[in-house]
Length: 116
Image (cartoon, rainbow, N blue to C red):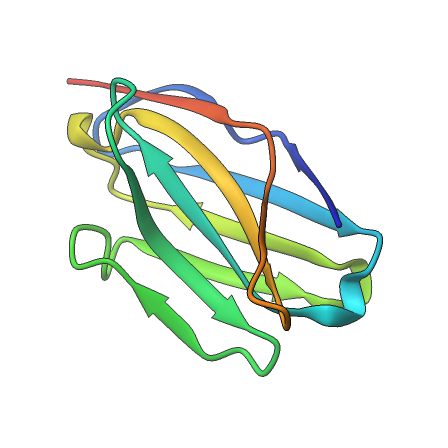
């Protein structure tokens, strides 16, 4: 499985919005869940949102009500709509895909910076 993140990252003022996209290719039929992690200042990776093939979603408390994860199965793409961004959302964001085998694949990181 290959994950290609595109667009969406960059610099935004607090209260603004960004949308991240991530397209999966390869053995996509074995993907059970896709999601987004973020890493702040090279510290731990935190799971912030995920979505299953039947559109069941999970969110970290820190982003609940502000971020929305969705997927376009026809395009094998997952999206993360980020609204009401805060400076503490500043991080490198990573797209992930978990397979039936339990293995998780990671896309390249996308920097999101929120200025106060």
